Amino acid sequence: MKATVIIPNYNGKAFMQDCLTALAAQTGSDFEVLVVDNASTDGSADDLECLCPGVRVHKLDKNYGFSRAVNEGIRLSESEYVILLNNDTIPFSDYVEQLIRAMDVDSRIFSVSPKMIQAYHRDLLDDAGDSYCLLGWAFQRGVGQPVDRFSKGEQIFSACAGAAIYRRAVFEEIGYFDERHFAYLEDIDVGYRALIHGYVNRYEPAAKVYHVGSGTSGSKYNAFKVKLTSRNSVYLNYKNMPIPFLALNALPLLAGWLIKMRFFQKLGFGTEYRDGLKEGFRTARECKKVPFRFSHLWNYIYIEFLLIANTVIYGVEFIRRRKFRSKTAA
Image 1 (cartoon, rainbow, N blue to C red):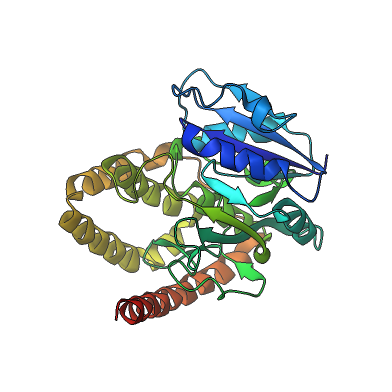
Image 2: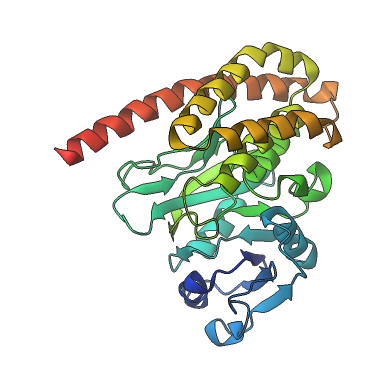
């Protein structure tokens, strides 16, 4: 098998049938499907064979979170590539085939992110690859913009692990998904590490999926998600930035945290956001920091350039979304 499609699942019964049915109808056949179940209680891990013939199921004894689930799947796989696919997605018929084709182009490609389209608003983009900026904010490229935009393949900061393909062997070099994250920002973290080691992350618009979004957590913002994301934002920077770069970026990172704190305070999640930051700073030293190597210096400089550029791009996309919403509401 060329690829293994790994679906981490936790109580995803409402979505699993559509996802597996779409995989069973793929134009390519050089892949297998592996569902890693985080001790679901809704029966979603039962009778999966009926939905997708040949599917493998690996059941965990409790909910270990996204990172542990996909790591289990990656280690169980033997294929050249692994595709991580959320259970609340519906892949287009040539999705797997297009991702494999994009990976085959260059051995330095670590990951490829597809065009993700909002399942309930199919004229709008959900994600065209993930970006990360100086303020310590991760953001979905193109989210909320017309679906016909972002029509060209290009390099990105990180793939979105909700539907991306990865070169399995590279995990042995850069490390697997950080299980301390549990969930959220773990894909930015692993994409960051790939950039440090000189690998490339790309976006491929020919590969497409519909995505419900927050199918497991239940909503875009909730106490659990806000606390984990704020904590993991501390981990992400501490682990991947050498001390000189942390010092260089300290002020914009602080500004980003303060702006987010005010934003979540207005939404009623200020306490959770502050608690997450406190936990992050208190426990960051327990994380495994990426060892600095002089051979990677130019990669760090390139990443710094990306962080600056992505800060500008975030502002441009924010204004573009506001204008598009105003136009459609008029």
